[in-house]
Length: 260
Ligand code: GLP
Image (cartoon, rainbow, N blue to C red):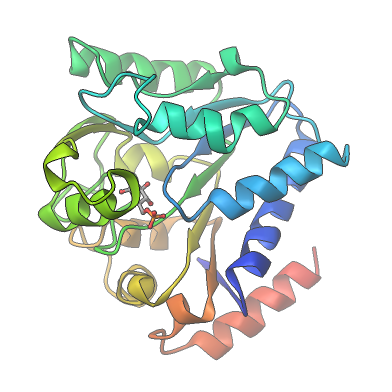
């Protein structure tokens, strides 16, 4: 796991965008795994700038998103499909028909999840997966206590995630946040050939510490990435503040990025 520690979230977002732009330039038909949450928004804006500046094109890119609230229609303004359309897809030249988000209204969630996994497999697997991290160390909606081998399935949110997300997505109305979601599993995520995880702010410092320097544990599902051989964490100084070896990681990642 490489930890890139930046002074600001803007700088971290730019560096992460550089990695995605470079990958898509090299492989215009890349398969991307995408994430929601407030964290990747700055990076998505940087990708939009790259498209506008004709540095890269997403016309042939296909994408699969991590998760969707169970029970929300794609047109619901708090759904992750709506979020992606607003924050990325309408800003870049990707074909909407090439973008995939789990259907939160699926009558048979198990069937929907199985078909989603099969579609990813048919596309050749995910070349690069974007991730945020929950304050309890979850990735996608894989809460503490989820098997690290889990596959895409229906999952249940912890009270702390419901609270965190109510603040961001539901104007603080706790009772409006769905308590379940369809989510890629930890095992599914770890199969991506490259992972780019973003983490900003002091409220992510414990999660980042658990992910990077804790043991691999289903109590912090992001820690599964320790076993991945091409996982990059782009964070600001606040999110990295609890890492024991932060100076070393910063030097090592700068050296590696510099030599690419
Ligand atoms: C939700 C999403 C995660 C995301 C997390 C953190 O739980 N399912 O994919 O990483 O929120 O969101 P934020 O970036 O807003 O802190």
